[in-house]
Image (cartoon, rainbow, N blue to C red):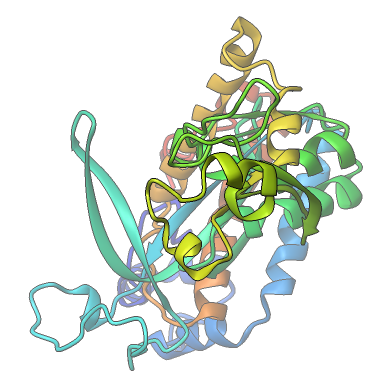
Length: 368
C-alpha cells in the first residue's frame, strides 16, 4: 500500500492510517492501537531478507507457470540507493565528506560510490554518494524482475551477475538463450560463463575504454615502444585469465643484441637489466570472436536492454530509490518489497484478464 500510494516516509504512512480507520481495519490493525513509526522501522530492520525473498520467488514462479515470464532473454542492471545521512546532504558542512576510509556514523554499513549524469549529450557529470546498490536480473520480454539483491554501493556488476544467473537457472529451471547487459559487464570472465556454462549468447556492448591499440607484428608478437618486435615468452594462467608474455629482444636475444645493443628509449627496465615486457590476454579476444557485434540481430536483441531501465523507472515510482530507513538489512527489505509490489500487480493483472496492464504500477489500481 505504501509503495502504490507513493508514500515516501513511514511518518506519512502512520498518518495515513490514523486518518483512515477503515483502512487500518483492512490491514488488521485496531484503529485505537495503531503501530508507531518505530514499529515499522524495526520490522524492516529486524526481519530477515530471506523471508521477503521467498515471497518474491513464489510470485516469480507463478508468473512463469502462467507463461507471463519466459526467461529466455534476460537483462541485468543495477540502481543506486543513496541513504538519508548528512554526508549526502550537500547543504551541510562536513569534513572529509567523501573519504571512503571514514564510514558515516549515520549508516556505517553504507559505502561510497558515484552516480553518472548526462546534463548535456556526451557530457558526463559525476556525483559521489554513500549508500547501496540494487542488482536486478529481469525478463527482457515481459520487463519483470526475476531476481534482485541489494549490496553495498561499492560492489560492481560483474561480481554479482554470474551468481544471479546460476541461481536463476537452478531455481526456476530457465532455458536461457540470451543475456543482455551494458558495456560495464564486458569482461572475459562474464562472456566465457555465458557462452561456455550457460550455453547462451551474450548481447553485451563492447567496452572500448578497455581496448588498447596494441601494435603487433605480422607473426602476432607485440611491438615495443622502440619499434622492435618482442620475443614470445610463453603462456600462463592468472586466475581465470590466460595471458601471453612478450619480453625485450635486446636482453633475451644475443643475436639481436649484437645489432641493437641499446634501447633507443632507454626504458627503465632496460636500465635495470631486466628489459621491458608486455602481456596479451588470449581468452578475451578468442571469446569475443564468437560474438557477432554490429549485426542487425545483435542490435535488435541488445535494444531489449532498455526494458531494464523501464523496470527501474517503475521501481522509482514505488519509492525504491528513496528509502526512509538505514542499514543493509532494512534497505534490502525496502527494495525487495518494491519488487514484490511490481510482481503482485503483474500477477493480479494476469489473473484478472488484464495482461496488457501487467506493468501499470501507478494506474492499475486508480481508486485505491
